[in-house]
Length: 369
Image (tube, rainbow, N blue to C red; front, side, top):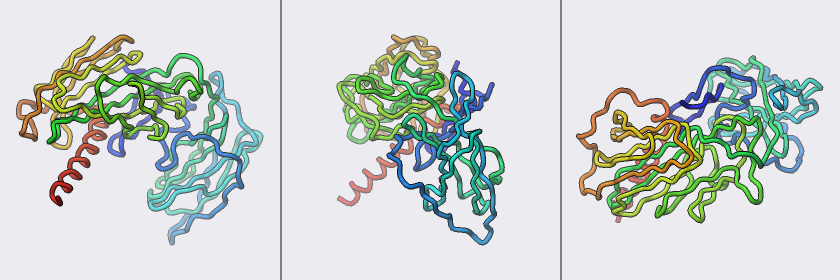
């Protein structure tokens, strides 16, 4: 079973919401999804003059309050943080940026007054620095009003201790392209339950994983770790970005050469759930505890689906792929059964949308040549 992630939600490419666990929702979850265009956590810049601007007011603007409390979550208890700079950020349809900053009082409380419409097109976030990082709150929507108190939890950092556990690992093998190559998308869902933000050091990344042998053009995917914070070398992917408490997605992708008949997935410290999706009726996955489930579909494309629970640290999985065929399109051998689960849906949409965009781009280039 997946570990419970109390109150944490992942937005997968703006298409599906994945809720990992609902029991025992705690107060320590400062973010549920990374702020669009802002990021959930980032290096703290040098001190600068605090920005103070006023958002444009619409004809139906309403004065509302954004208020709450900032605290450090330490050893399972809240420690109110007085004197912290708390910054309010506004995210609109065409612009985003800081609006105002105030210092929290001795009990960690802060308060802003804003004027905006209530149509839901505008959102706010609050942030505060701690331990060299800036932590952001969950999204604060104007649609339902801004009256609810905002809890902004800050965390101490560490670069030591056991690696951040992998709650689930998802591997999506696409159908062969015209040139016979395939794209593979991998998504690691990390679950940091330590109460501290994991940071990298000069000798140790915040997260790392082995890449399969023989893959080409390894690169970042649509996850929570920015491309600039992922490096690929010596058969490894390494992350330098901080990993805060809660769930974090690390997404990568790579290509398989034409005629590659086997993909050997190396172990990665185990995982509560491993999911393998193969867009080919003749593709087969095998490994410890792996079982085939009902096929799945998204955007008119069909996938064989394989699952394994509680994969051990040494688990290695093999995916056997047939030689490329000239024909393309939906394979009639696969029959869609049931509804795609929420975990699967998000992963499929991420990989399929990116693959479709590449296919359309290649088609336009061939048509113009």
